[in-house]
Image: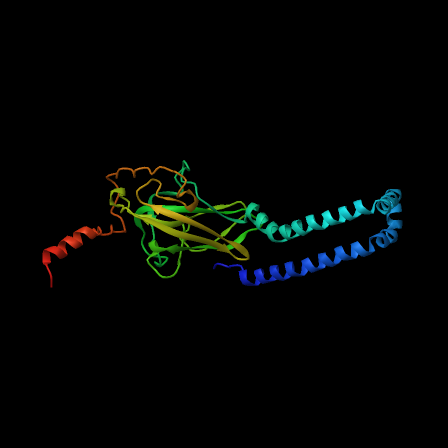
Length: 286
């Protein structure tokens, strides 16, 4: 079961909070402008208790003797605050979310020396029953890590994309258990089978597929990552942010004799547009 955050309600609450904070801040600045000296007088005993009474009195005297400088200080404070407060309210949460490490993390490292993220192995087709027999294929995997301090319950993943050949997302299976849900302890890493290619790389067709992986758990923010599967390179799967990063496509390795046939059949070659026009010319006018 994937528990998704209620983005609509959360967004409305954030907007309401921000819309309420700005008028309150403007009101407080107006109160400080009009009654600043009176407020300082009321807070005199507190300043005396912490040893700041003389400093506050000296500041009051200086402000009274330099009204122009006091007006400049207030004006600059209002201008800086007018820029800094909206930036902190609207930009601060986004910066925090971009730097914060999520409790549920999607991990993908095709350079792993143990080959845990891809290789020939058993594959259970999408939507098959739990007791369905597995076939041998080149399986592409991702890792799911629990970065939080508490166990995550009912961790599950779904896959969207043309490679699924379904109008709706399909559930992914964990490599270790072949099940669709799993509980993760803090710091634990589990692997999910994402996609399968023919076990023989010579049977891979030349096309690029875009897939979206979503991982969620009970009472946990959902993790989403986009990948591309390019059957002309090795490893064939890579994150979306590396598509235009200048990585040279590596040729697929030669097929070994002990690999079985693949579950996916290669797509038929497309007929060039020029060939269709030539065929029409040969037929002549109708």
